[in-house]
Image 1 (cartoon, rainbow, N blue to C red):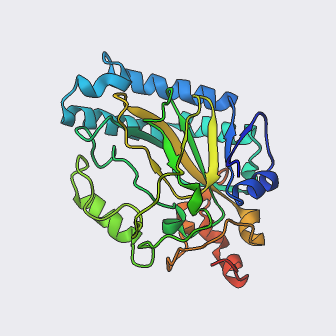
Image 2: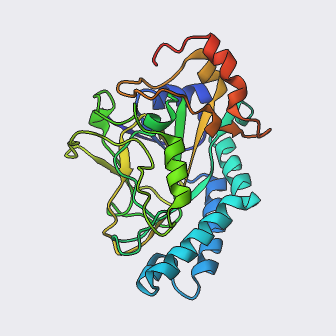
Length: 296
């Protein structure tokens, strides 16, 4: 199976959903608004780490100073209205019906080389499915690099597990416990409670796919894919943008990726808000609960 499909232009929600719910990894090439968002992010990052080159700054700064600059830059990016404005435009340009879409937070990820400068907000994401935490199989993930990638600093997929169950801790993991632990933990340190449910078996990584795309491209994939951050051994810090969306029509009509191994007890509707009105997705829960979702 050819897992990666490159697209120039737009796909409507139904076309895109049919592809990602079957496991495809979609790469939307050179999206104009994403190009502008990368340029905007670069301005913020460059100003924050000046006079050091952002991708090499960790080798010039002590760990605490690097982590402090990283955290303030991530916060500035997340709160700046221009970030959301440009990301919304990028979604619109590749065919997302924003009137029918709900989105999660827009995040700037910073992953330094090695472990010396890793912290709570600059930690590598281990192997996981996002849906182990959200329990929403209509969840679409969006990921984009700000600077050029190499296989040593990118995102990794394990497509053999698209249809193969993985033993995991989704039945016992609690988002509330993670948030409480995060609030009590020094942000320079990794939290003691895992940020997502964890696999409970050895994962065969021989058939992994390392996706290397260009700044301005957008990677789109189902949150049900098993994936992770590549262990960064490139000697460059990785800067990337990510978010997640849910299409309300998919939710109501039960168009979704398969659930083959999640045992979470709750659906995290409250993680998502309407792209235009900012109303929480929880407003749609009653409809969904009255209409059985067969894959859960």
